Length: 264
Image 1 (cartoon, helix red, strand yellow):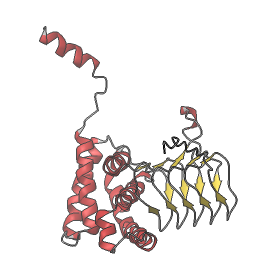
Image 2 (cartoon, helix red, strand yellow):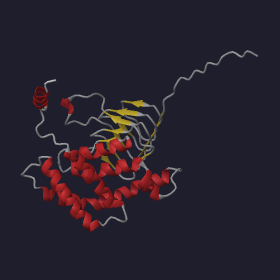
Image 3 (tube, one colour):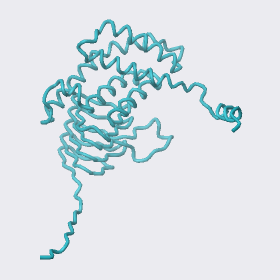
C-alpha cells in the first residue's frame, strides 16, 4: 500500500474547499441552545441571548455571510421576532393538546411530541430563511428531521395552530403554504409534481387552506394544487389537482381475503 499516494488522491478529490463540517455541528448546538432558551424554565433568557449572539456570529463567519449584509443587523432582527415565534409555538402546543386524546398534559407536548419539536425548529429556522441567511436554516431543519423523521423545508409558510400527529415520514416542501388550524398525520407528503432545477424560483408545492385535516400517508403534489378550507383528506389519497372547500376525499382500497377451506 502506497500511503502517500492514497493521501494525495484523497486530497485531489476533495473538491469543496469551504466544506467545514464544524458548521453542521455548531448549528446543532446553536439550535439546542435556542430551544432551551425559549422553553426550559431553568435556562436564563437574558444570559442565553448573549451566548446565542456569539454562537450566531461564529455561524455567520463559517457560512461565508456576505460582507455587505452585516450579521449584527440580522441577529437583531431575528431576536425581535422570537417573542412572536414563541407565541405561535404555544398555539401549536395548545392545538396538539386540544386535538390529541392521548395527550395528558401541556408539558408532555413540549417535551415528548416529535411533531411539536419539528414545528418548533422549523419556525425558528424560517425566520432566518426569510432574511436570506445561507445554509444554517436548512441545517437546523435537517437536524430536526434526523431526530423526528419530519422533513419541513425552512422556506415553507405555515400558519397558526399547526398539528403534526405521530410525525414520522412527513415531508413539507419549500414552497408549500399551510394556513391556520391544519392537522396532518404520519407519512403525509406535500410535494412537487416533478423535479427540475429550472423550477427553483417557482411555486412547486401545494397550498393547504385553514381547518384542513390530512390523514396518514396522503400525498398532495403540485404548486397549483389548493386544498379548500374545512376539507378532510383521507389516508393514502393521492392528489395532483385542487379540492373545493368542505370536501371529503378518500381512497378506496380493494381488499380481498382468502381463507383456506376447513378440514372439518
